[in-house]
Image (cartoon, rainbow, N blue to C red; front, side, top):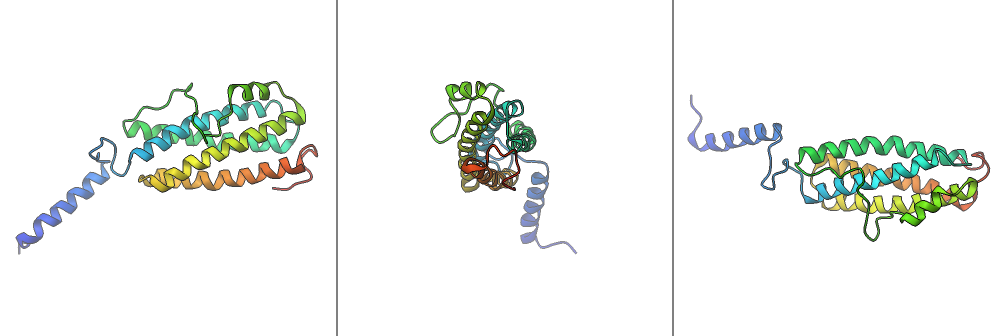
Length: 195
């Protein structure tokens, strides 16, 4: 027995929608279904932001006096480089340009250190390096949390939203560790404050 005509169109439309969703159908803006301008802005901005953090962690892998600064720097690198790769893949899928490796983080509230601050960091040693690195990275993380929170508030892509929530959670935890070190835990080589 054939289905009533009144059911054929809605069922066919639902089947087509499921098929298109499974194939990564594009929305009217040209990106995949579910991605919006906020998702693209988040991935674009966070890639440049993370690249700068990785640049700062590379300095910390050479200069720190406190073992906990080195450990934190390595954790940041291990977390953020895969996120850079993931977000670069999303931008490619969405038909958006991937920021060049030289792209800079800009704007009020970005937390990006100035060229002068980075130069000061490069020429610092021992506890002075550790303290300045923590201060700059703390401000940098504040900027990343703000960028990720904007994605949480305005984004649509499920994977981008999940990553933004992870970034907010992880970086707030790292910021607390930095604050504890800056409040008096530096210089004891890692024995005085537990994580």
